[in-house]
Amino acid sequence: MKPTTAKFGDALRGYAHTILKRDGFRCRYCGLDGTVWPNWLYLSWDHLLPLGHPQRDNPDYIVAACRFCNEAHNRTRLDVEGKTPDELVEQKKPLVLTKRKEYKAFWEAEVCQDVECSDTS
Image (cartoon, rainbow, N blue to C red; front, side, top):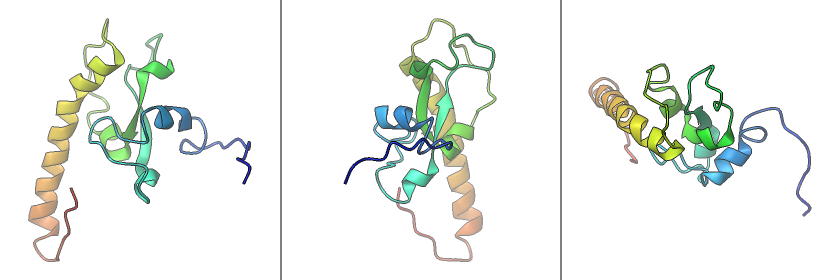
């Protein structure tokens, strides 16, 4: 079957696809594997630099992220000057993972209290 050349306007099939592919379809923060269905549906991309930064839209400074990790601490002002993309991910990663733990604790205490839950992490 011949690959399609159609252009898509959404992130997953369009403008973010090259970033997601470069990063192995895996969230750079939590490791969510987008090669597993339906995890792929939860992938997004994260700009490592703030609005107004001249390198913000440079693909080197955009990484694959699941939707939760992308939004966790998205408005936190971090020191970005002179840092590589990998250094920026490592700077944000502990904040994101801490937020994930907080949400998991809430899920365990409030959601799983009355229903049977399944943790696949």
